[in-house]
Image (cartoon, rainbow, N blue to C red; front, side, top):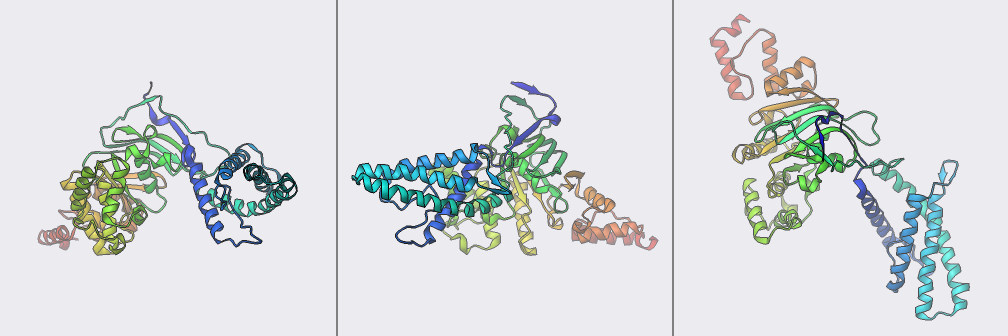
Length: 466
């Protein structure tokens, strides 16, 4: 294998979704077509099919051959035929719909004629002209599906004007320089269709067992950084990545998202989107079953994970009856069941009230302190994290501006006028009092320390001297 001593110049490119992205596009198109197929009325015994992959035909043998050929022709047009245009309007969807219908329809009715014994005159002068007529209809219908779908997929960044060639790092020997459970080395990253980098030369080393808060204004690059740790960047989002990220000692460009999940668990800001089953027990078992664990191991891991988030005994509860905070805990438990070393939270308290925020960080702090799990949080509500976090990272416009203790980073936020509104009021009061010349023995990271420092300062004459 080729050894890479300096990853700062290493580049990795990938189309969104990688080489399997067309499966996603095809699935979405089939879903749209199926809905249209179900609601379309029949006219003179004919129902618009809307897609080549399904049919109401009672002759499945003909479907098997005809739809396979139709799908092949459609794929050929999508990948190999240049767009024929009249002005800005592309004729390719209409031509593809017409020819695909002719090919699949011809095969279908030909097989039907042979098997059923339809007279040749009926076949030539009745059925084939009907196939051509249906082809004309599909040529008219196809653009009405194609252009809205094209706009949708481009907005989702599933399609590019020109193909992006996926990089391959399998032949490289990539070694992490630091000894952290997560190592970000000279990371720069640009999304597809973006002219400006979302991250630029980011270097972070996160030690096992630490509690790290990443903060910054919207668009600073927090979520992008977290997704790179989990491998979603570059494997899912695609784009251009320069530098390297190591998670659990593995280079993310050489390891799939599923394999990285054994080292890192991700809880999204929209945590409800991660719930896919009806009951708590089913949700806990879902991922573990996909990994092939035995029923006994699934039961053990589920019970242990639910106990850690204080949801034990609720296996039979329906997810719909859980509160928002309980659903979030359920997602955390499902991630914990995979026994990762790192928990990553992307703005986890955005939908919680103050009491919910406090309870959430009590739970996360307990997981960090008792279970020795590494915690990385992208957060705006810094006050709730102060009792637990030992390190803050301030980001702005894709750069790391400050990295250190909470006190150091919040001072830098005030000094550099970057995201000052996120500084907790209690600590902001200390900074303003210090500007007036008052010194304090302890930082105002909680009410107790603030009260002690104020009383101590008054007794020592610090306030009077100011």
